[in-house]
Image (cartoon, rainbow, N blue to C red; front, side):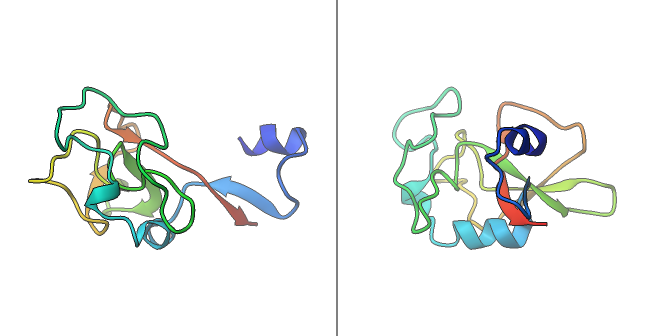
Length: 123
């Protein structure tokens, strides 16, 4: 993404895209609550939903809770697993994680409940 955007002249000088740190993820998700989450509330969802299924938060960011667990840069443990944050579309009000909930994902972990978002950060 960095190479593509830089070549297209769309990446500002001195910046690059990255997975968010847990601290960054917590900051842009801090005001999200279960009412904004993309999850199986009143009907069962069978897959992640299109971005923008709920209202944006105060930063204009959509769907920080629910939809998919999001990869973070930070390691979850000393085994090389990374932190996943945010819950997924399969979560329900009875088992919905809060913005502080973390899960682990190994370097090659992939499933239909996990995704990512990138942040633009200074070099």
